[in-house]
Length: 603
Image 1 (cartoon, rainbow, N blue to C red):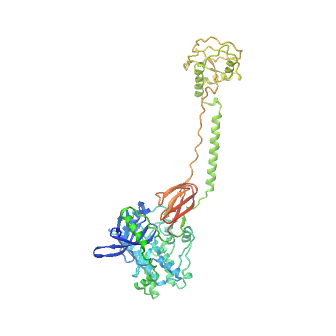
Image 2 (tube, rainbow, N blue to C red):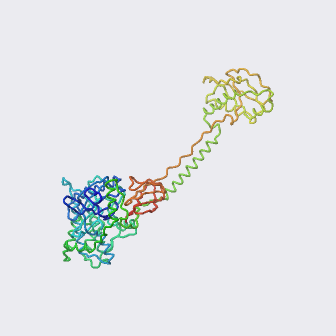
Image 3 (cartoon, one colour):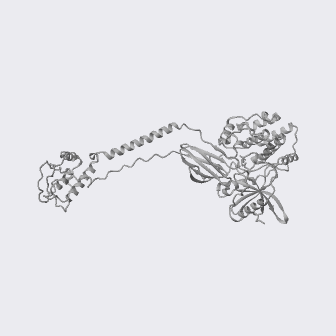
């Protein structure tokens, strides 16, 4: 004996959709009271997504206000250990999707009168929802937005019921639809919904027209290989005349469908009430009286056989009840999903711009930046020393003058080795007083006058003793600098004894080898590469999928925001372990553009 979920005990799985699973359950009460209900719970992987939970609760809040014979009734909204569920009326009968499937399998055409009556009842329920008002009498502006053969059920008691207000939206609702998201089934959407325009009740009129056409003709008015081609047909092409597909269809029915399927909503029926009135008038003109008993017989003739419960079904329901009552969001019931169909992909890119001009411009910019940066770097590295600023050049000369006297003077008998050391440097005249910038050319000329090849020995100039560095105090700016001492080429002479030199005397020093005291070169960093152009990728995956882009895991849908990807082609992998789906798609991202990838995995 399992633990019921509240006052409900699960019996079997009825259906599984993109957001929720629907179970047949038994509601128990006092004194042996029992009632069959449908228990609809949000799928486990969506139970942690606040947006989907809010959408699920919004369905319950809206549908709880609806009380009409042609709309499924809501009994209860419950929660068990984090699992939200809705208890609703159990419809003992098939959906129009199941009716159409059975008719195809038998090779039959559906009767026109019964189908007109069923769609008329659905129109009555939708008109009631469209006119629903709040407690203050203000119209809610409710639109279903997802009318299809799956959401119209035919009860064995002879009533047609509209179900699944999961994505219904009130005009004053606080919820907001994501930009670029298409909610509903594309084949039943009017042109204004495909364009993203604000919707009103005439969107449901169009969808009802598509359902009636499909049931009578045996095919939809627009069919395409993909959602993209289907959208193009709905926007631009007229449906094939009903008379060519169903010769026995009356002219009045063709006129009703032409008006309901008008691309311009101003030419369409203004309400489902007007559509219902014309359908009922058509039945009268045909001399057909379709009673509830006749609709009941129709439902019984086309209902699908219900599989008998077995041990595996009972075990699965028991496990689900235990998980929902004790251990948080329950896992999906294995092996009880509807057979998966091939997924359909919808890529809705914006109008493709001419990208050749942008590509050529980007390539040219990168080439110019690379050439200019490399040339500037080489010029700075190989520029002559005279091109440095005057202040840096003078500071460098003073630094060398201060460091050379610390070297030990060569001995008189040093011989060729001492002469070789001195021959590796060029004599440079450094004034004791740093000249102002105006006198800098004169000092430069004195340096230039030195011979290119130094002599074997340099004329000794009295300098400070070896242990003490030369002090170079600055002279007043007003005093003119003394004339530099010229150093002529002369044979080697013994060095004089070290004496103290006056402060005003200039010192002739040997320029050290670059390896001994080289000024570090300034490194010029390479120019930063330009930022890559990026665009958005919006993922609309039903029911869910683990997403990898170019081999990197980006999360599980639904994602909180679009993916920002670099311009170009990217490989997107979608994995749904519950459905056994593992597919790969290639998307092309344009600069500052938006790509929409829609994948329906549970069809």
